[in-house]
Image 1 (tube, rainbow, N blue to C red):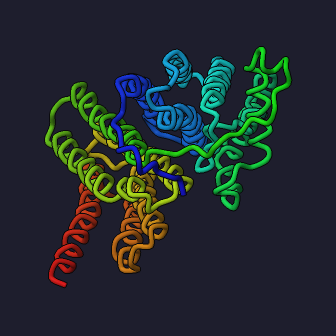
Image 2: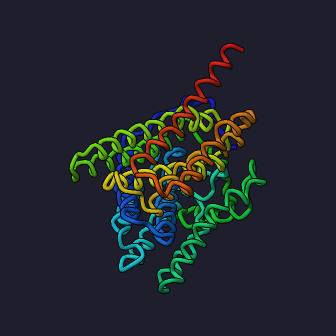
Image 3: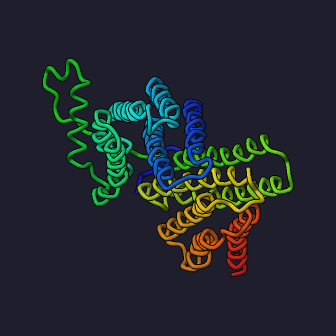
Length: 395
């Protein structure tokens, strides 16, 4: 579990960090656009790969800013922001003519992040992916090969970066020898006169994360994604006739997004802020949360264009699958923080299973009715929390 410096109160996101997060708005918009229309398994898979690459690039600088604080290098942050903006601009053609641009921008952003981390002389054991880019090698090789090998290498590189924190879980509390060697080498390259006189062993300490600040940064990302969902509803409504079906889907979609916002910020982030959930578990769960909300937003936008007809099978599975993944993510979080079993049986599992059942047998349902049924699923989750709280107060 990441350490929190008790001597320092939790700080808020700086203006530089808020400016940095603006690039995520553009990236999420372009990523969600890839799911418009009738998505296929291939398009969903590409969406997940591109989304994960953008998210990992963002987290590298987010965690660096968390540890560096006021000492964060402004130039490096702005250059990283520009690199992610290039990735966002390349998303529409990331599997076409701009594939090398996307991969090259990703490599540059990750290297910038590593160079910034080297200046802190700290080792982030809680999420080493942000500091050590072992998964970069496949991405660099992908710049020299064509498809489909290029995309296989992307997946391999991302898998390495995701699995790294899990594989190093047993080394928590100590600096791994490989990390010590890497940072000693970086320190020796950066030193000038001292290096010529013979630089001795360079000591690095474990990075101390400000968990309250980290929870705020992760929460801002979720707010951006929820805002993308609202924008999907608004932009679609602006371009179609306002029939009763369109209005019904718009209202249902707005209520659905509210139903996702409330439990996320009531329960999803506080566990990380209080230190109850290890960072190496909270980070992947955050990715699942923002991905599922983005998928739901894309599905709502598509159904809103044709509210009265039956939703295409792909769109139905996209929307219902997004809701199911959201509640599966919440259930996994409940298990990790050791919530009582009744939360899993009465809240997490029903929220996961009900949308999947609806996707499987709801082919005859009009799109507007399907969205309202999902609202009922989310409403049940809120009602369960309310009832559980009342029972707790009485006890």
